[in-house]
Image 1 (cartoon, rainbow, N blue to C red):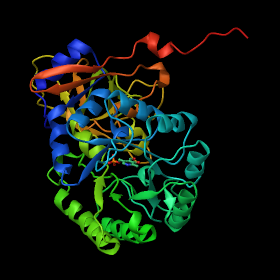
Image 2: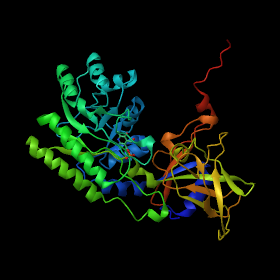
Image 3: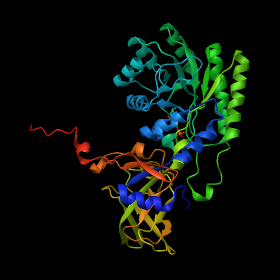
Image 4: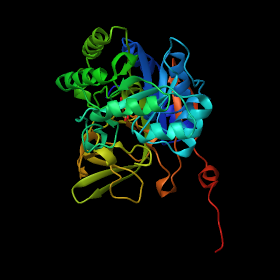
Length: 419
Ligand SMILES: Cc1ncc(COP(=O)(O)O)c(C=O)c1O
């Protein structure tokens, strides 16, 4: 397996900060951002990895953000992004969700954050809270796509977005309350299938017709894929082609409404997945009948994608001593949780599979690759396991960007009440 970070850094980092540990390579993030800059505006879907240092890096790289919760608005503000809209510029933060909770509504009001509406009720709720803000509509075009049914965000079984036949109703509702819908957004799942994408672009053109001349921006959403398997690493998405498909749709829209329209993209995974490694340590190796298990000290409380989606992550071993790792064996890699689904080598549906890995020893490091997106940000405290530390690597230097959670922090809101 290839590493974008020198191997000895993993060993040093594990010694210095302990494991499990997330390491992100800053240069990889910078490269991915550069590639996506063919679009007018790159809006980072921070849910992929919302560490403040990652957000601050995005800001320095000229990337704006979306926020899907009150907490993500707070993170964006803390990282230096501002609410409101400066004339001629894309808003730095956009709240994109299908509901408001009380905290989100309050923060939207306080910081004048534009909202990407996912349910018509949100318009009424903005008006009831006395908020007049810029609106865009997240449209569900009636169909979806994605690498798993859990990330398919379009169609009549999806909870996301405003149904495509309700756009005009939303426009009227917004106008009734003194607001304008000036943008359209479609995020309908993660994957790259250009035929499918062309269908999405056509739907955007149809939706734009319903909005008419008020339209100022269209957003292609996220969903730009990466290859998780080593043998598919050469098949990178054709970013130019991806852009051109959307650009054609944009030009068609511009022709029909008679003025220019800004084209946004909203990637999460693409910008951070390949930058990230989850470094764990093998704590036990055991045989169950014919199967060999490598049991590591990271579990689905750290990286949930294999358990949740059956997702594949590349796995490599770094010896804890000077041993050459010449031999290999088929093993199952599992975590420490008291939960049988806590297995990193599994496919969708929970089918446990083996992986051919170097013959390892207890104490060796086991690295999960391409773990920068939907890794740390989807971690949990289940089994009362603490959030792992996060570190960023750049040009020979490694810096901690999040301390490992302490037991005190984990317990600080619990109360012992004698009933
Ligand atoms: C509204 C929205 N935009 C962008 C994204 C980012 O998707 P991806 O990480 O696949 O690029 C998501 C992911 O769920 C999303 O819901």
